[in-house]
Image 1 (tube, one colour):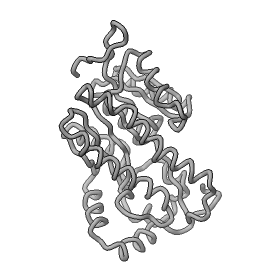
Image 2: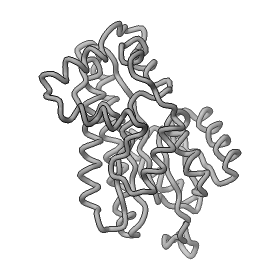
Image 3: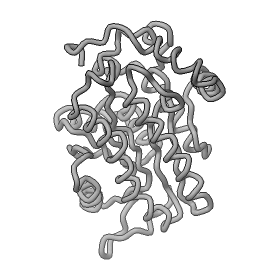
Image 4: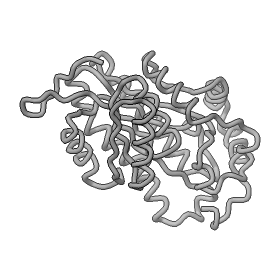
Amino acid sequence: MEPSHATNGANPLRPAVVVTGASEGIGLAIAHRFAAAGHPVLLIARRPEPLAAAAREVKSRSGGAAHALPLDVIAPDAAARIEAELVRLGLYADILVNNAGVGLGGPFTEHDAAGIAALVDLNVRALSLLTRHFLPAMIARRRGGVINVASLGGFAPGPYQAAYYASKAYVVSLSRALASEVRGTGARVCVVTPGPVETRFHARMGADTAPYRYLMRAMSADAVARATYRGWRLGFRVIQPGLFTPVMSLLMRVTPWLILVPIVGLLLGARYTRKDR
C-alpha cells in the first residue's frame, strides 16, 4: 500500500479499511478479504462481544491489524467517533465499506413506525452521512473511496419488503451518482448488489418462508466478499456478485413495472408473521 500523507501531529497516519456491520455475514467476510490483502481494518457493529470475536478472527487469519469499535452508526456523533478512534489507532479511513443494514418483511401497513424509522435511519441516513463525512478527505488525498453494499432488490420495487427495497434503490442511485461526481479525483464510489446471501438476514426479517428463498440460490458471504474485492480492484462502479445477479438485474431493468412488480410480489410474499419479525 502507498504511504499515507495524513498526519496526526508529527506522526503519519496509515490507510485503513472501515467496515460497518462487520460482526458477521457480508461485512465480516469483506473485512477478512481486505485484511488478507494487507490492509489494516476497523470493524464496526453494535454488539461488543460478537464484534470483538470477529476482530480476533480477522487478526488471527490475516496476521494483520484488525480493530473493533462497538458503535451504532445511527448515533448522531457516529462519524466523529469513528474518526477519533482511527486517529487514536494511528489510522485514517482510506476505504469506507457501508455494509450495516436492516430489513423489514411483510405488508408495509403492518410495520410499526419505529421499525420503519430504524430502517431508514440505518440503510439511508447513516450511510449517507458517513459517506459525506469521509469522502471529501478521500478526494483531497486523491485515493481510496466508498463501497456501499446494496442489494439486487435495489433495481425494482419489492412488495412485502417495500421499505427495504426502496432503501436499497436509494443506495444504488446515490452510489452511481457519486461515482460520476468523483470521477477523475482519484477517489472512487461503488455499489455492491448481491442477490440472496446465506446469512441470518432473511430470518431476521421473517422472510425465510418467502418463495424466493426456495427458488433463488443463495450465495455465500465469502463469495460476495471475493466479488466485492475483485470489483473494487478493477474499478467497477456497480459490482454484481455471481453469474445470476447481472442477468436478473438486467431483466428487472428492462421488464415493464406493470409486469415486474407483481412477479416480485409473488416471490417476496407469503407467510410473514409478527412473531418472525
